[in-house]
Amino acid sequence: MRRAAVVFVLFLSLHSFAQIEKITIPAGTPEDQALQTISSEPDAEKKVAMYEEFVQKFSGNPAAVAYGNWQISQAYQTSGDLDKALSYGDKALAGAPDNLDILVSQSNLAQQLKSNAKIVEYATRGGKAYNEASRQPKPEGVTDEQFAQRVADAKENNRSSYEFLETAAFNAIADEKDAKTRMSYVERFTPAFPASRFDEQVTQYAMYTLGQLNDSTRLYSYGEKALAANPNSLPAMLMLANAYVDDARPGSVGKAITYSQKAIAVAKADAPDADKSRKMAAGVAHSTLGYAYMKQEKMVAAIPELKSAAGLLKGQDDASYAAALYRLGFAYGKTGKLAEARAVLEEAIKIPGPLQAQCQKLLADVNAVKPKK
Image: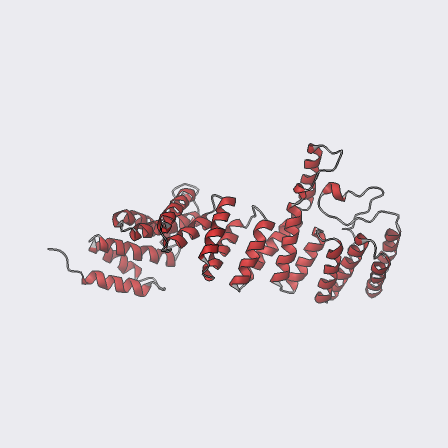
């Protein structure tokens, strides 16, 4: 059973100076002496009983109670009683609510119990505690430079715990099947883990989920906030462009054009270092831009955008490629370029998927048009 995470000091606790909560038990105190006795007990069941007595005896010391309950939690985890382990871990958190070590332990238990709700609860609490370290007041007698260094050191020492919690929360979002619940996790994740390694993926989940919920108002609000936090977020730009292009409200198509153009500029698909994801993003943006021009009856402007989209999406994503071909075929047909329309639609009908029937119908319509003499 672990005991290394508890910190023993002879004089003054460094808790407020290090900024990230740790359990401290001063050396030589009755609590310390009791823990020394418990740690020497080889029998696991007896040790749990001794920790129970320890918690009762030192009930007036929150640090001691937190530590004792945490040790009991770990003992039950080792024996396989995960529900009891989680319960005692919560008791430990009551005395040390921002302790990253305990929050990591609880998140691990929640993962074993396959409880996404609990994973997100513990992980986001830990993320918030970690990021609030630099916002706590500076102790008297400490220079700005000393304080900044202490905070930086404390955060670096706890980075692995923070990253574990960040990953756990993200995996819970990805695993959650219920759209409403998933979105509630996203909304808790974003402030707890600002500038996260998973920002792009979380934004994608958020926009997809809000689309499932058919909550356009919330979708636009989240997308704008995501772009305010990360102006180069391609998923946010693409999802906003896609949402606005089908929005009937005045000005929405113009916004779709703006976001599509921004996405194309950010993706830089022609750059030597452009990878598959950037090329796909640019392809989708060109397709949405072309569609927006079609909605404005600007077929001539739409055609080069849709040709670029088809070139970038071919062999990358069948659904997006089919959508670009369908739109291109429609634009060609509207401008009287029937041979070009047939060529792209004949390719489009070979792609299995929801657009296949629409492409076949459009091709039939094009074939039914009599050429002008």
